[in-house]
Image (cartoon, rainbow, N blue to C red; front, side, top):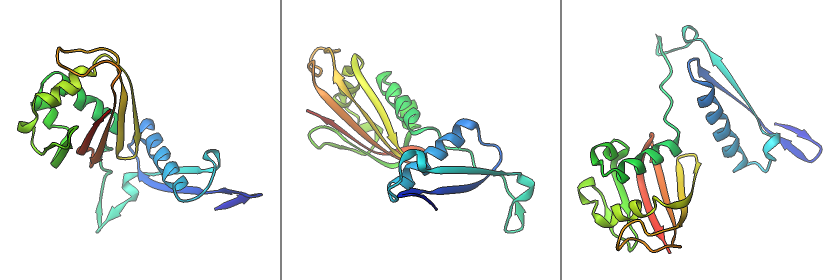
Length: 183
């Protein structure tokens, strides 16, 4: 770690096997920067991340040459694609985004632990947020999907002006926990 006056300037070097895209390396650099800043009080522009790529022929573990694992899909994309599958009522596709042992907590505290339990209230939440001002943010494996419903998409659905926050936790690129909050 370097110091410049009173400013702490952490330098993180990570070694990875070659083959990851620029976008995947950028996501890694951003995640390492945020993780560092969660512990070290450094300004954003003071954190340096160096990605050192190594050729696969220069890496062995247990005497065996290895290749890098595929990168996980961006957490925001996983959640967006899950929501899209739910809006389309495509449970087969929605299941592909869920981790084993997933749990969804609906407004009112109803717990859902299988796609067969997804009732009409769950679908109404997503169908009614089609016409919204929304925002999606990710912090590592946590994703927050929030917004305000601008109009009632379905008769009996959520009224206009209702704010919501959906909080997702991902594990190994799949949704492990989701909590849907409305006010």
